[in-house]
Image 1: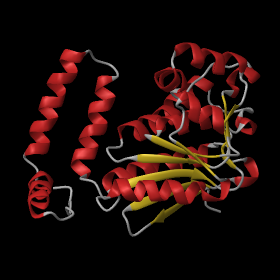
Image 2: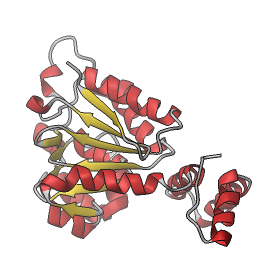
Image 3: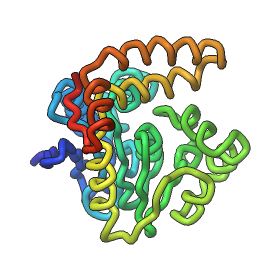
Length: 258
């Protein structure tokens, strides 16, 4: 039985659905391996212009499947280095917009996965939980990097230290998610947003995502120089020429990613 569903839509949107609903889409080694392969496949496929990540059933992702922590399991640090870190890096570096459809609870590493996406659409019944402290662990899979950048260090500390659930209303208020919608509209709303993003210039969006990531780790002077470098690339593209022509001709542009 497949643990990840991959569905393509006409708009250039690929939806990846974590499909272990009976386990609240907890991440076992099989699911981590196929998710990483799917993200790398989406990066290579020029027909894919945007990605939606969601979960089957009533959860987005409950984090690590703790039933794997038995004899013969790799160390926690080893599992992070071998599987979790490559997944988070694949999401963050994918030069296509990634929208999380947070349809239910996103706990532990599931919370981290949602934050590693570019945008988040959240069901009004969903929650985020930094569950690591409940089992004597520290945040991983990028949570301690993404969370303070979204909500500030003090709010991030509160979420991590208390392990209290963050409901959808609070998540939207503090900037964790961009949209909160009724539960039965979560996936459709995320896919509609992804479809809108997929109509943009693929090269420009990819370079913009690269620029945003760069700016989080560099000062203004370096970011200005990097923007100029990327603008040189974008300015030589066929999509830029098409955008200018479409503007002059008062029509919608048709971008090809060239």
